[in-house]
Structures are given as C-alpha cells and as structure tokens.
Image (cartoon, rainbow, N blue to C red; front, side, top):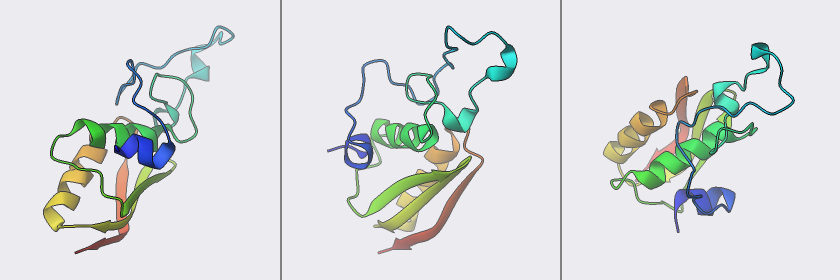
Length: 116
C-alpha cells in the first residue's frame, strides 16, 4: 500500500501530479480568484488538504521512500506536518527534502517525529 492510499484512501489517478497546473473553474472570471499553492489538489483543483496529498504522492513516486505505517502527513496552511516514527535520520532528511520540493510547501515541521 502506498502513502496516498494509506493516508487519504486514494488510488493514484492517472493524471495526478505533484505540482499540477491550477484549474480555473468555468465560473471564475478574474485572475484574483486563483487557488493558493497549498490548496492545489492532485489534478489542479481546489483541495483543502491539497499540499498534504501532493506530498504523499511525491513520497509514493520516490523509490527511496517506502510507506511507513508509523508516519503521517498533514498540513497547516503551507506547512507540511510530519507525525510519527521513521527508521533513521537519513530517511527523515530525504522526506524533508522531497516535501520541500512540492509547490506550496514553505516549511516542514518534524517536531512530532521520532527516530528509531
């Protein structure tokens, strides 16, 4: 089971992207109604948990990051929040790097992560 399936119950969609192009709805008439980067979903739609979902998709797409049943991904605004336990500091560092590469992520909070 992958990150996206375990944390959000979603199968990876064929057109899902870590950094999609925002989709402007038919009713949007002004450029000021853009979707904030941290609310951008897997397909460019508005999604309250879009950043967290795109980070989990990025974890799924990285062959060095297995899904750990002891770690969860959340978001608070543009901050990615990792919670739980990881096997090593090297893996945590890799996860931080991957999460920071996702459009909309301004910080990765690891204060709730233990190593071991």
